[in-house]
Image 1 (cartoon, rainbow, N blue to C red):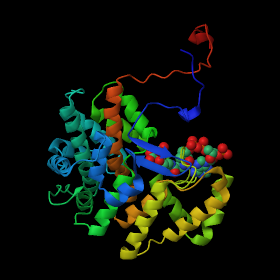
Image 2 (tube, rainbow, N blue to C red):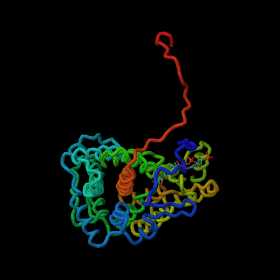
Image 3 (tube, rainbow, N blue to C red):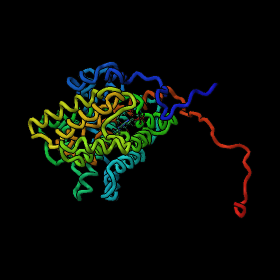
Length: 378
Ligand code: SDX
């Protein structure tokens, strides 16, 4: 079989065939199982969307109720995992804590039965249910507090905010957070999903698959950008400083966090929805002082880089929403991971059906028949 043309970063190289989601980067379109993200954001919930992504269809009421009940039952995390988290250094980044904890779940549930739909469902439910609890638990542990147990009377989004802030969230805050989870759930073959697929293709357990994806998402060029955006807005400090700051970045050929995308060459549709969510929160809870800086930066970047297709991506406004929800900056990417577990699981399940290990090739640029030179002669 002949070698295909090499493309750095595998740009535009199909790695699989998938029916899970679709992106049109020129038109700014994102669909989950064919449904537009704007419609899901308005009418669905994260758990219903997760079900749609993983099992391919919107659930009936009975199916959704049963799914919610399973998630609620599996939210608690074994005391051994919580005790393990108490040994993590408080200074550790929550994404590293999440990666270690997700892999640790495999110690308890690693009996692999990958062609048994009941095993696949049980693993999907456990990961969706336990990851928010682990993220919130590490936050409380590193503050020196005991983790808060999940509450059965709160839905998925409200429960995370409750476990994190130790108080019941405002209904608007819970609804906005749930929409954020829907928006971040899936995005075709991004870097962390590709990691999940490659790991899944070896038929390892799903906990290792998710741990692999979490490690990939943590990078600042991928899921870690939302945390960097807030630091950048703080560094800019005022609307008047936006353009001088941007000129400095461009002179240094630095990447502007929260902008640009391998696929979108227009504003990411998720950024548009996140911006409207931010404005809803600001109306009720007070305007974020960095919002005006963000709007001016978006305007300035469009003037300078719009012709290159550099526009806000999903990470540009999400941080302002999360800050208003009381989520600490270094939990922004773990929150992204809580949501993206749905998409990673959907691709894991789809990859199992493919049943072919990933093994790309390379274009060799080294030498041949090189002599071994003894150390005394080097
Ligand atoms: C996510 O893939 C996904 O779907 C990811 C994601 C998902 O839901 O899973 O959407 C989530 O990861 C969003 C992206 C978050 N990352 C950032 O905001 C970091 C800043 N963005 C850039 O690093 C960059 O835009 C990437 C990594 C997102 C995409 O990079 P590409 O496709 O590899 O583009 P590139 O680096 O080859 O840049 C092409 C050109 C270059 O200029 P030239 O050298 O051709 O003159 O565009 C420029 C780049 O310098 N460019 C930027 C820029 N992004 C691209 N210039 C300034 N600032 C930027 N942010």
